[in-house]
Amino acid sequence: MESLHKMLVITQLARELAARGSWCGETHLQKATYLLQEIAGVDTGFEFVLYRHGPFSFDLRDQLTYLRGLGLLELQPQEIPYGPKLLPTDSAQALAQKLPRTLARYQSQITFAADAVRDRSVAELEPLATALYFTKQSGFPKAVSARAEKISEVKPHISRDRGRRAVGEVDKLIESAKKLKATTRN
Amino acid sequence: MATRIFDVVTRPENVAPKAKALLSELSSSDTVAYWRRVLRMAALCHDMGHLPFSHAAEFLLPEGTTHETISAAIIRSDAMKNIWNAMTPPLRADDVVKLALGPKEAKGMQFSAWQAILAEIIVGDAFGADRMDYLLRDSYHAGVAYGRFDHYRLIDTLRILPSPPREKNVGGDGAESGVELGVEHGGLHSAEALMLARYFMYSQLYYHCVRRIYNVHLADFLTNWLPGGKFTTAVDAFLKLSDNEVNAAIGEAARNKNKKGHDAARRIVTRDHFRLVYERNPEDVKINPEAGKAVYAALVKELGKGTVHHDFLPPKGGAPEFPIRMNDGRIASSAAVSETLSKLPVPSVDFVFADNTVAAAARDFIEKSRNDILNVEEN
Image 1 (spheres, rainbow over the protein chains, first blue to last red):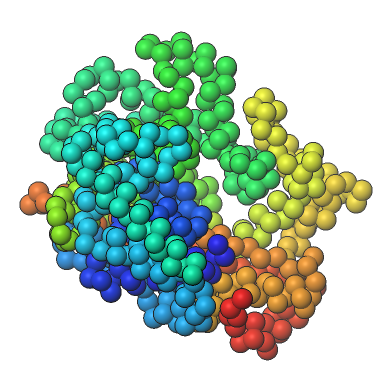
Image 2 (image 1 turned 90 degrees about the vertical axis):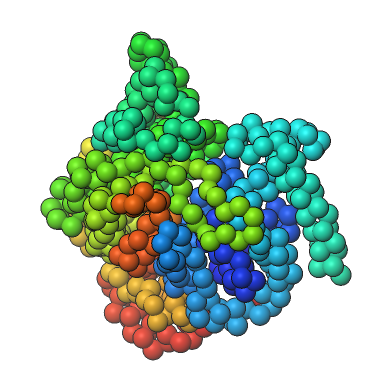
């Protein structure tokens, strides 16, 4: 993906999250981008590794800092004790206006990822994204129990039941994304 | 420095109950002693894979290789394995690699919560010993005072703390699950001083335009001088090539027109470096976020490729956010507590340079055609 388009996709994702009243901190943007890439099929090119709150991309972290440096995202501190939000600026809106066709190309996938993340807390996103991580890992058993067990193994604070629920949610999201992709193609 | 941090954060009276519960390793003195030694060795080995002149010409490594992968190869080499095996108890080379590289660079290795914290002590964005060490060392050697900060006070107040709440509850349970390196409230100003030192060092020293252009000329020289235009990754040969060998070669090539890399070497030795003709600025970014790239492309069309250079280096790492234990015991995000940190600018590099002979023409051209150059056209 061209770098300018990547800027547009990430800032638009932040805009869509904020518009839905979702918390829009780094963790939410990380997980939303992961879903955008792995389920909605937008190849942002970020490499995700299993980290503190599930799949995490250090490249995406760099990109978010870059976007802040350019003035396309701004760090908005919140009341004590909460972490900051990352919100798009007027310059990000101006960029979207300059690239209408690119925005149209990715809009439905961005909407899908923002909808999937919107009402979930960081604690809920962690099992969901971790379930997706093992679901997408090539050669990993597809059985719900195997994936749930693996989640509990690498994240001992996530119970097997919670892992099982997360796997179910991921499978549902993957199913809905198939419809999305079919619609996008048509 | 890394060992000092380790000793402070693992001291029983400093460990938060949640950290104790999550990090079972802390309850075994043998385990703590083993990892203390691994951490110390990892900190010492972290930069072993640095090339001559560190990061300047890292792109001349073969595809898929970085200085971190070379560090890992050296740590796993037979010579180093002999050292690990001679220790009591012996150290596992892979444990040293994990902590030396951290989760970002140790591709394919999974980190437990304990290993992630220990790696953070060395390579962490906020309080990594590597970062603290290079700021202090570089400011000393460069003769600038703004890289200094009270690292004694900072280290004394570092703690392993629960992650701060990153959101107000949005549906469901908003509790955080992990632990991170953070500070007691009393260390906040020292932490701010570290982040400010980092900002000043990057914006005034590491990213100074003249320092950056010498990177470019050095890389140009190495491209011509190295066999095949690339660094070797064979550990023995790699370790034989230091700044000294490269400095001697630059001197020789600068004096002899027939030597490979003569032009770049001459530029370095005689200070005939390319001149800065454009630097990205906030006004231009509003028109085109990739302003430097656009200016470079326009100048290449106008003046030809060999006389201009685009130097672009996006920032690395995240926002300076970490947990703080407030005086009332609550854990809070640094972004909520410190106005200074939440407003810290992000330094980066987006320069266009031109040969001295065409620099004035380049500046004139940019001034006259700025709007056309920066215009974003959708494909």
